[in-house]
Image (cartoon, rainbow, N blue to C red; front, side):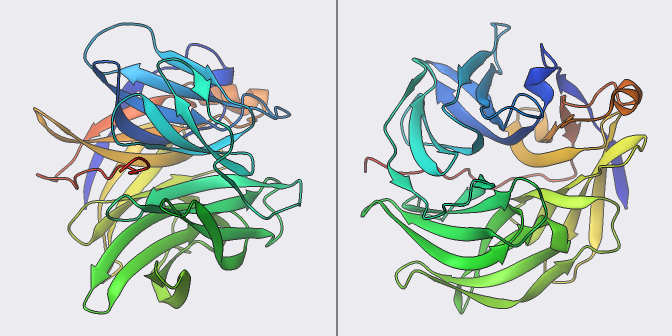
Length: 322
């Protein structure tokens, strides 16, 4: 299996900025392409996080937008500057250029103070998203999976009893649309049959059983060829973090990447560059004890690595206004 050591792409300017980066996405802000991501919270007891955007074509300072809560995801909207963000228990839009937030578009029906919105993915076509929640104590199955549809601004529960709903990708076969979903503590990628019109997700077995891997599966991205890349969050002290590419139909591991000095890898993103398809990975410190943090000097950094892929999927955008 091909193995590649990733290099540091962005080192956070502050310790707070590297606490829990996740969900990297490419979008346009102003006239520039940027890499944007969420920092779910800025410290162990923080109740807020922030959004970040890094200009890829020049050396200007990164954008940082404080959030009115803890953000679980950001997804690019059609057009420029704006992103759809799951923050706390609501969906909002944010203009990254102006730093302005909308009022909530929708709110999830969860009263438990321990749950907040976590990871999400855009349904092909851009008129719906699927997102999950997580138990912030990572203990009980009190989290859920939701469908949000743009045209009617509606949120529906489609699966329950999760603990930490994380990476999601979509596929399709002759039976229709497939949602692949990670509930991190289970160490499985579960397959659902998603019917957007009926607002249902029907369980259809386990696509990947990752129980024999080191660490917990966190974020996931599709490669466009029936394979996915899974980022593994390892709470233990190890020399390097890990992301692995798997074939969904066979479960075979076919490519891996290591992140030296950063074991808590949170999310992957494939990007097309002139020199080829690159993999960007977010990592976190998330409350590492001081002794462990000292031995993980690159925790919280964003990494970049070569891949064996020649093409990557065209990114979807949420079509909120069209």
